[in-house]
Figure: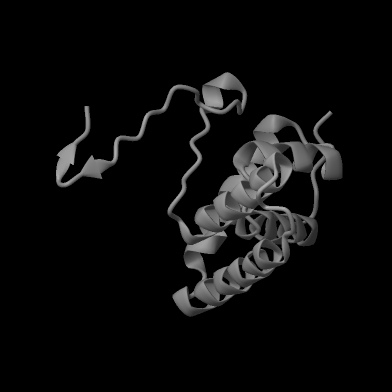
Length: 136
């Protein structure tokens, strides 16, 4: 029961996914949102996501940097206005805001294995150098 959509609808969907990517949504959330918004299956959602990522790559660097800066500033404002950062709930919220900023600026990359139906890859370990040597 595959229903084809016109080019304008495809472009609108791709633009929406670009916004989700720039807003720091992770792959799994984008796939779920595609299903909720447009009743798309996982496979088709990944195709739209690929088109969106390709269109982001084609954006002039200045335009992309401007959009990223705007989204980062919005999150920094939320972070500054966040009350009770010292509580457990406030700390979790603050961490989510900071993670979102890191995703936008490219310093945090969330890897998803498509062979696990979009589930997050568990067990990834990042070793940060300490004085030029790996800590043990």
